[in-house]
Image (cartoon, rainbow, N blue to C red; front, side, top):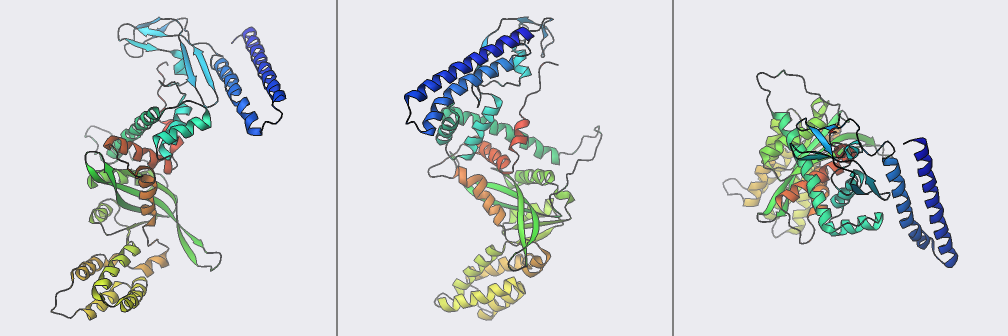
Amino acid sequence: MKVGAAQKAKAAMQQNFEQMWDELYEWREQHPEASFDEIAGQVSPRRRVLIGQMLGQLACQHGDGEVVEGVTCWKCGAAMSYKGKPTREIEHLEGETELVRAYYYCADCESGLFPLDEQLYLGEHSWSPETVKQIVRQGTEIPSHRRAAESFQAMTKIPLSKSSMGRLVTRYGHKIVVQQQAEAEATVKPPKREEIISPRQMPQPDSEVMAVSMDGAMLNIRGEGWKEVKTVCISAVETVPNPESGEAEVHLTRHSYRAGLWEASEFAQHQWAEGCRRGLERAKQLVSVNDGAAWIWLIVAMCWAPCVEILDGWHLIEKLWGVASALFADAPVARNQWMETQKAQVWGSGPRQVLRAIRELCPRGHPLPEPVRLGVAYLFEHRWRTRYQQFRQAGYPIGSGSVESACKLVMQARMKQAGMRWSREGAQAMLALRSELLSERWDQVWASFRPAPKLA
């Protein structure tokens, strides 16, 4: 922008500001009893108009995109024809503005180009990219597209419908789904014979000891019924002294998540990709705490061996309660006393004493009640994952609360409200969005959406 044009634009902005001030001052004179919020309500729409004008002036400070020597089509390389300067309205969090910019068209491949839009990284929406980012975040956090749209409109004064909110959330969630799928496939894809093999970059983990836990929770999918959403939670393990007792406490921090409607084999690739991103391969010690699901321990053995495998303590206690209820069906007091003893054995010496206590109550040669048989089989199968005293002394977690909380946080809090049913595509899009948001990678993933410029 030349000096004369800059001075002219500055003078126009000063005049607009003075006019706004005069209008507000006159209104305040007529409303001496107005509250602070009522005054702000008068300032806000005028401020948005003024800032919108300023945005338009600054956006076009270096020109409107008209190129003297012409523009070459980025698709076919042919010369593009100049077609005038259409106006475009842009909604931003700061205000609404209009841009008048040059337009070029390629007749050979029927594609158009606005050079100024490319320079400003404006997308195809009427909202600016930052505004879209905040819209999608609202829709990802608030468990209703309608309420999210209303909340966004109330805070920003930008009109937004429920359907627009839903379309943007699904669209950008699908972009993340595609990225996650590509990342998962890349981590397990063998190189071609003609490719030059280069070592994969392995980031440093957040702590010497890292934890990986997996679990599943059910979600209602339209046309399919209840389907399992599989979730992985990866955390740093830290030992912090209790300020009152002085004893060391195990804390899991810096969580990250990956969740989806995948079969176990596909989920294995996704949790592996998330683990590689968090540097689990370089951790000094890896710990995996889970319930007794066979598909989980199969993935752990396939992807993360050797690691410290730990059965979630409270799942084991729950199984023991089933055993106690069968053995002491008519004696609740004796059942409770027996359980207290067995819990102390589990946390202390391990499962051997518990198995012996069960055998003492079940004479040989007599069939075991089904709950007792299942409990004994469960305890025996996971016996080497229940050395809780050793695990605690080593500073390892013995509960899978982090991944159980992850199922609630990532999926249930947003997607399992009363009456909700999801399409498979919509559910996967939302799970991808929430996984990235709650892993504190929102800005990072959004930066990946910025398109490559079409002009060199």
